[in-house]
Length: 84
Image (cartoon, rainbow, N blue to C red; front, side, top):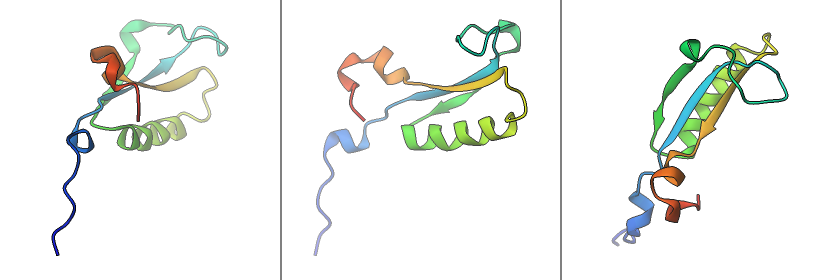
């Protein structure tokens, strides 16, 4: 029995960027020093980006001013991919 064919969108990359660093204020999203922003990496889907984001956030749990974010690059590159 053959496996069902995957839809073209199933194989489509939905790029996500994990980024973080020390913030000016914990209630905002302005980095204290842009030269020290941690550009963790770009990932092909949200699940992989979230896994890395969780690990980085856990490493900095004792620093209240440090935050990590998942940026949905695919939404910036192609707004039509606004679904997960």
